[in-house]
Length: 379
Image 1 (cartoon, rainbow, N blue to C red):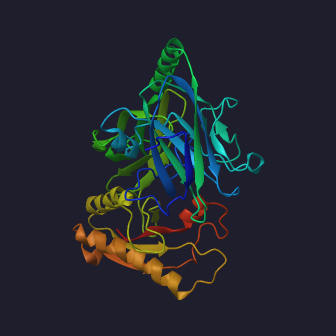
Image 2: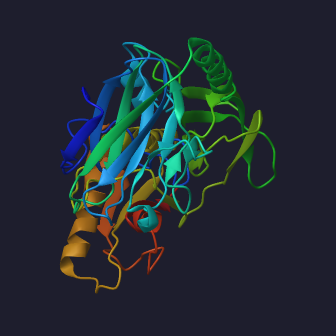
Image 3: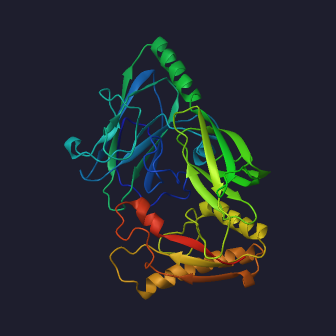
């Protein structure tokens, strides 16, 4: 709880704490960081009607801090954030700017409410706030080697009529964030619509995310959120893709299912592991469940589970091969626990010999190298 307008120096902890609330967002999302890294959450209550600005000041100038500011609005607040259904009111995820000594925050000279990753303004637009409102500020540093930061809050008093007008305008803006998403499943070989079991991850827990034996689904979704769309049908490869609705009112996504043949591979890109370990991340369990359903819908199919790791510029040493094989084995064991016969499954590890990006230039490419693939051995 921030009980003063100046707090610090605060030495950022290593990691995200007991619970990872924010993860799975695309690089470039204007509202959310990709995931929490080394984070501090601050809570503060506004003392009077005002324009809020603040500075996040790194103790070491070349440390890079990002922030997301949320307004508290009820007991389900934390869960809504975890579900991706609670949008921040201000963010700044831009690269550090040495010209301003690595600082970030809200500034009266800035015009942008949300600044995504990459080059951009180091400060976001100020926020008109009213007395008694509660806010949560997340400050994240993507690198463990940081020396902390100081926060300075600034309140500039405003007349109540101005606050009410601004509050109504922001409410109107939030109400425009809903978009219509239409998902249609087609046969890739002929373009005809076909029914399948459709799964949509990223929806609130209160909504159904499985739509069995349909060729089309119509949903109301939040823009700039990442949704994972899977489709399963007998005789076809498992389809997996992500989609981010942005500013249009209607989005139409075609899922093109490909008839299956021996030798085909499925990239299970949404099944992730803890760093340098074989522990499957909890967020991967839905994708793992859809792989299990694919095998249940196709009961005669046999597959080889193939593990790959990221090892840029390094020889394919035994530790790489062992880790990739153990990760493939972890998937193998989960499928058997779920009722899939071991006689239908084999597994192996390839280490870093099959990297998609031999010289990855960003975290997304490195993550793509760390993957598990399924090869169809028999139908």
